[in-house]
Length: 263
Image (cartoon, rainbow, N blue to C red; front, side, top):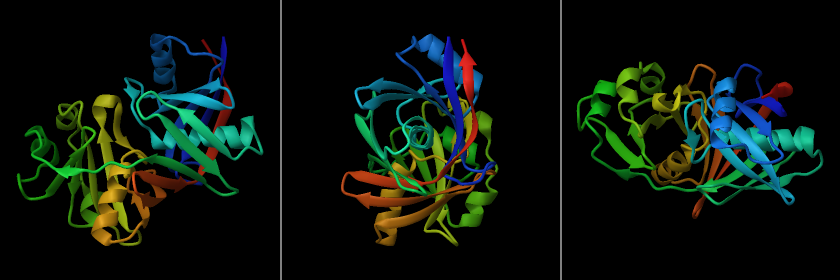
């Protein structure tokens, strides 16, 4: 059995930037064990699996270890593959997902616009392992939580950029993951994202966490349109718009590989 396979860098227009995702086009669903093996073989931070459903698609995302409930960069990459390769000329799709219902993506000549749910992150008392992982004093930073994600607000972009993670302690937080954020120098805000227990020690660019970050910074900066940068080694950028219960994420993508996987 051959599966059409594409590698796409999302939230960038650079071949060695952004977040690489693998896209697999299926005629029908494989069993979860086989899907997990394919995702592990790709060994990207996420593999998106698409199955046709009428004029649209069912969509699931997997890391090398686990299924994801929501994934921005692989959704953007899936839209890129459909628009540029599979269905040129079609500019809008709806993806049916297991955990967040229907997600919409729309393309123009230069970028893609995703409509994702908006989440409110609330102040919390985190698990004590977080302080070990970050080497911070309890109470010294604003800590928010939503969807098993800790948002740690730091003082500056440089503090986010220069942070050295302790992955062994971060992994002990499972199922929680950690995002660091601060006001940006040349963007509205910056971030880094760590999810080692999901097989992604540091995610290059994380669309889904901006469903939490964009509403937070929109309130703090009193603006609905925001430019965000993620400060991983590969780097990437997003344009976010907060509107009621949705967050619109705009970004670019570029194809890096096209072929097939035999299983």
